[in-house]
Image 1 (cartoon, rainbow, N blue to C red):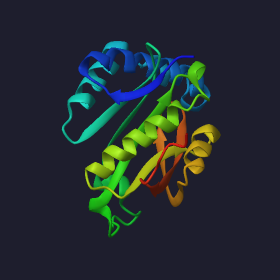
Image 2: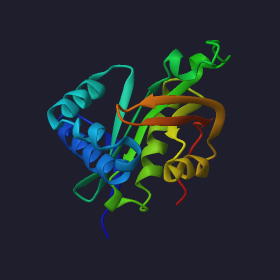
Image 3: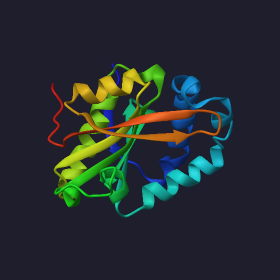
Image 4: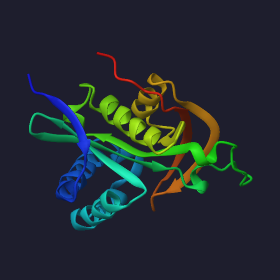
Length: 186
């Protein structure tokens, strides 16, 4: 049996994170995003994006491994005001103590092995170290797997929605929120 682990990503991991994103989006989000949006996923541009994210001082990118294989990743950091504001622009009282889980992606062929939970637990621990107490994330309303994953750790929609335009489709996303006091069960 392979050993599963999570570590902070380094710049050497950026191309592999970009690969995981492309594979996962093509496999899991093709209907949601549409072919034109997926065709725009340039490997070099994604790698550059992940290099910048990994080097950004206010965020962390985590990489999940199973044995020697990179299987998923998570990006997290302090939540920008626009991610946590109410529809009228007001900020919650705990705005300074709120973290953002920007993404959790596990390549579909490696799913259902606990990698998503390990990634989220590592990101939550990192956010707690930075002083965050609560987390937020966004998930497509039509993505039952992501919604179930976050509900499974006690995160729930807070009533805020946004609509993203992929160029050929619109995606309605729900903001979910919950405690960062997440622990893995053995």
